[in-house]
Length: 283
Image (tube, rainbow, N blue to C red; front, side):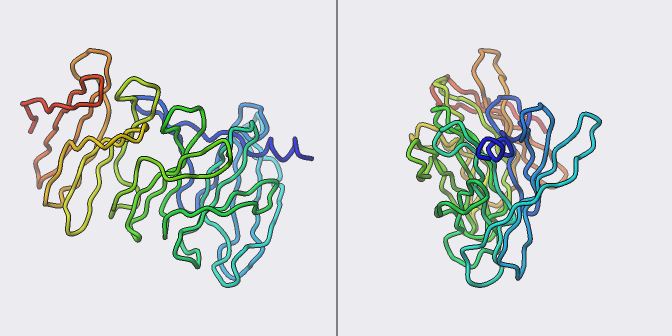
């Protein structure tokens, strides 16, 4: 039975970016996708219900070779909460502890606590509780520190916060390199190994009320973030990764929209996570 259950929860579908390392997980109310039975086809798991039912369900739909889904299989467990809403509405498929078996880590926007709890689900039972962020808009995975274990990050425009949590061999989720205010449900971001040491560093554009707008690089090794833009205004910016000076090292591009103007700012990386803005901007 254990081998069958483990097969249900495979790795999530990769999201193509300029630099690899980022994986899609769950936004609020979305199915969790992945190859859950090892046949190289994208299956899906649907969570439910969200409301006044304390019995949480996991509905698994395997995808056939013809592109259609097979009849669903359902499993359930009782919520740890004593009041509604009881059940999670988003989650990730992840190997907690690096044991070679895939679990679920689930959370919910309306969970009735102030910790934004995340729950480790194994064999469709709630095994362990972790602190997350309150009112999460998304929960996703990436290996921040290059140890071979997928880590977790989550963001919320209600808390408002974006934060990361490092996976570990003892199955504990510990605070990761990202922890900052953020007033966008899923802020613009990208991942790259800016120091060339095997990490997935996160370049992030965020807004913080009463503080301003920022573009920063959060390093997977936990060193202080590199601040590319710090402004007292609230300009929304999009970030992306590219090699602008063709030296084989990932750099950062920033797109600013100011009225009818579109401004592109480029920041080159020296290979050690030190960035220099190119003098020319494109209007």
